[in-house]
Length: 548
Image (cartoon, rainbow, N blue to C red; front, side):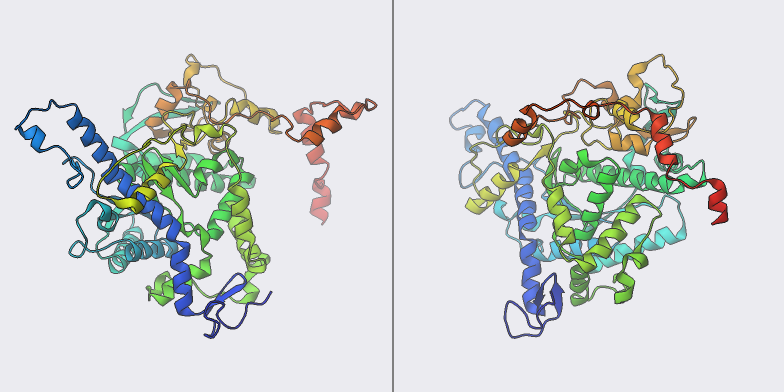
């Protein structure tokens, strides 16, 4: 379907941008862009009010209620009232964080949040209801290149300068993947196989520990495993990246953490995760809005296509160095975009090519992924709101509505639920057994350990088992909290790989019909040797391959 030549909103201005089957002029699309961000903007406002106003007020009210009431004393005079709500000195400063990787998406997100939410302190009202407008904006920039060189320093300085121009009052926080090792502590792991951990935490050089881990997972023993090694390296970078962002936002007392993934990147990650067996983590890691501990994770750009963000950047005169190159029509085919260097690159090129031909590709993939839920959904949804019926003077009816809406969002507590020691997302029970039963690879001889409780493989999720599927004899360092997850396996399981009972009555009726037993109906287990022979039957002989 060809987009109309005039704006579909005002009906008279010439189109300047086409989004799927719709066309807009510049003023109309500016309003559309802001409207699509409104839901996440309200979530950020509600999280800031909940974190810096409501909870401190409740704590102060509870503390003052425990004090004895003496007439004429300072205690009675300092009791909170409707006109003067309780605001203890220890209340956290209103703050939220934006994840920045130096890409155009992250810079657009920084500029948009600063433009729509932030108000300079000179013009901001000091009332509790205006806490989001006075909130501190932290821009968390994580350098994924661990090698310290002049090019990395120059890139960090360029991003800092661009952030300072787009959001003058934002605080630029430079980080590295080594910050995943909190307090410079780590725990040694050894692949025998399986992978075992030491029972003590030791002091490490955080940067060197991250480099050692990346080199261990990126090791390939043959040419055919190079793409698998690159995929493992990409996965471990993403895991460390998420750890650094969340832990930093939590330590800086940020109420919300916003990620810059656009619709194409989000859809590509969904395909990538499903292909690598990480679908069990999508209800948490891929959620559009979700509490992790006490930080609200948001993905506000997941409703925008890449060319929408590029158009926004050109309209607001971003630095041309961050703008993407304009591709020709012939360069948008799958053959031109195909990148098979890793699973992530392959998924990205596939979605980009499909998106060019079918504009609803990203929406379809993201919408399908949003229907994935944990088997025990009650582990994410609170049985009752934490706030209940609360009274917090000063935030108004609209502020109270925003607080209640974010308080009802799903909540993931990796300290309380069964979580993977590496990624801290939901982990299945007996994932290592499930993997070995379905693998056609020859299992390496298993080495017995004196302390089987420190068997790391027994606690990893299925996806992280693939990440740490590295040659025997490798040694690496994990963040120290991984030892906590291994030592506390008694937490309730969050994901169980159990076949669900048929829920369709027609299916049950069909299964109940009598039929003649057949040998093909009996499930038979196929040994790994038979699987390998079946795969080998599709391969060319060496002589035939040489002749062709």
